[in-house]
Image (cartoon, rainbow, N blue to C red; front, side, top):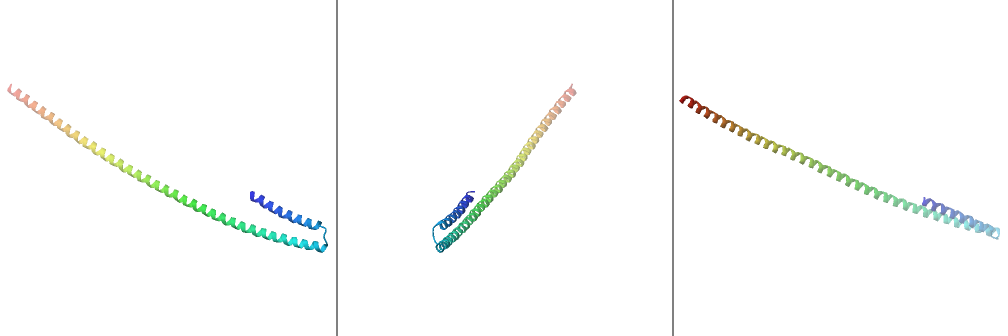
Length: 155
C-alpha cells in the first residue's frame, strides 16, 4: 500500500509540474515564435525527465525483483534444510524407540526365562524333598510295622 501511495504521488507531481510549466509558458507575455520555442524546449525537457524517470523506475523494479528472488530462494533453501533436519531427527528418534522396545522385549523374555527356571528348580527341589519325606515316612512305618509284627510274634 505504501508503494502505491509513492507511485501516485510521483505521477501527480510529474503531471502537476507539466501543467504548471505549460500554464507559465502560456500566460507569459511573449511572442508566438518565442512561445512555441519555449513550449518545444519545455516539452523536450519533460520528455527527457519522463524517460529518465521511466528508466530509473525500470532499473529499480528489476533490482527489487532480483532481490526478492534471492530472498525467496534463500528462504526456500533454509526451510528445505530445516525440514530435512527435522525429518532426520524424527527418523533417529523412531529408530531409538524401536531399539528400546526390542531391548525391553528381550529383557522381558530373559526375565520370564529366569523366573521359569527358578520356579522349575524350586518345584524340582520341592518334589525331591516331598519324595524324601514320603520315603522316610514309608521307611519309618515299615520299621514300626516290623517291630509290631516281631512283638506280636514274640508274645
